[in-house]
Amino acid sequence: MTLLRVPHGYRLSPGTGPEEFLHRLAAVMNPVRDRLDAEQFIELAVDSIDRADVYGRPRPAAPLDDACAAWAAEQETMNRNLVWFDPNSLAVRIGRDPATGRHLIIAATDRRPYIDALEAMPEVENYRYQAIIESIPDGISDEEWQERADAWTRMLPGGSSEGMDLWNLREPGDARTRQVIAAVQSAEVLASAYNPMTRESRAHRRAAEKYAQYLCAEHGFDMMPAIMRANRVPLPALQGVIHYRLAAFSSELLATGSGASAFTDLDEKSWAMLSAKDHEAVEEERARAGL
Image (tube, rainbow, N blue to C red; front, side):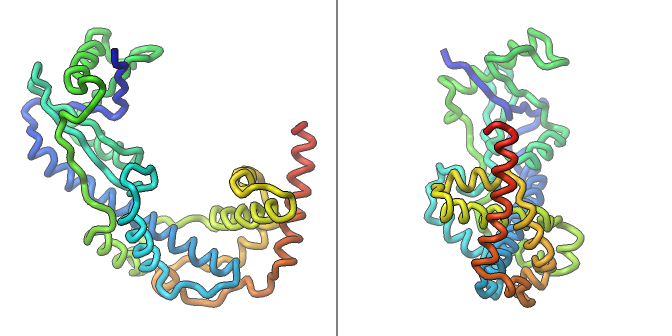
């Protein structure tokens, strides 16, 4: 017996056909994907600038375009079954329940903005179901929960959705995404539409990277355990030095990587001293905690 779990299962309102629904779904979801893609590429571009500055390398001449092109090239050769493939994708399975005539859909995504937008559509009813559950959700009767169990059992024989039609919003790095990337290089669009990474998060990312390298070089860590530790501990010495030296976020920075690095006064000895200072504090805290 297959124990079904359909966390993102929905039912269309009576009389709503798949063609009209999918047309409207595309109109609702394309702007969501635009934002997700733009924020992803902005983050990649800023990350490339910060990393170049911290490691004393020239900044990319076109950070946002370069980030988009590099990502698109990587996607072309990546296995579509990997979790890293097109993280902003939206796929929907849709099929007609033969017993009721109603259309059921399954949204294949872990992006909350897609789920929020889908659940806000008036013709969409939350129809989630799972066989093992502590209690039936509030507002749903035992009979209604069983109706869902029966419906999803019919739609997913053996737990497979292969019998339902598959719809994809769009492919990674398509023409629309490239238009979005061009648009966010406008100061007005960027300022009004997107929230960049904070200086704090940017600084901690680079500090954790530096500290992980220090753990490997000075304390014999393998890289993965070093990264895992670095990402979960405070690093005030490293982060403080990095924080105020980071380049100010702007559309010009994304487009051209303009401006001089403020990290030229730091050498490998400086980074090692800062890392050692943070390491001493980390070890003292671990000792107090009995670790």
